[in-house]
Length: 130
Image 1 (cartoon, rainbow, N blue to C red):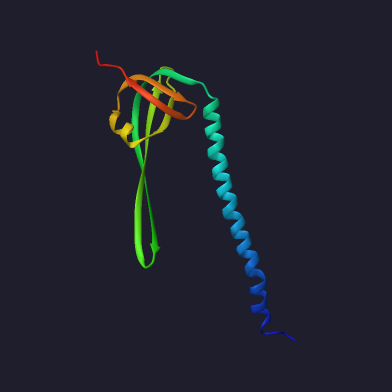
Image 2: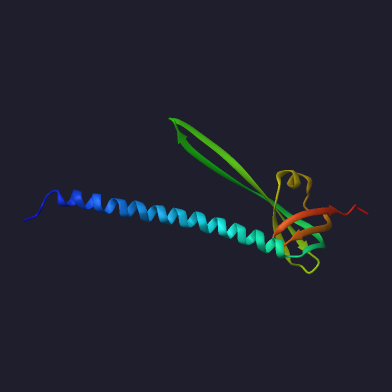
């Protein structure tokens, strides 16, 4: 005979397994993200610091908005990431993440000497206009 409480019992048996799987996925993503960041940092540290002639070809921002509900209050915030793209004498281009202050000091078309290490922007020394 079919037990009407069997479905409820099954939910109590499967529920903790489902929660454990979600927990493992979240922790795995967290560990993967941290590992990727450490790996990129290590790769940059091993890369030579290069100083090359370059021209700033473009600037862009990436604005990300987040919102949450806390104690019946809706909170939202934005975070802006700043990027600049430089072109080298070879015609190759590289994009770098920079601070907001650095972003504000740079202008498209600026020429000078770019210092970078791997994917890490170190600085840009503008060449005075002739």
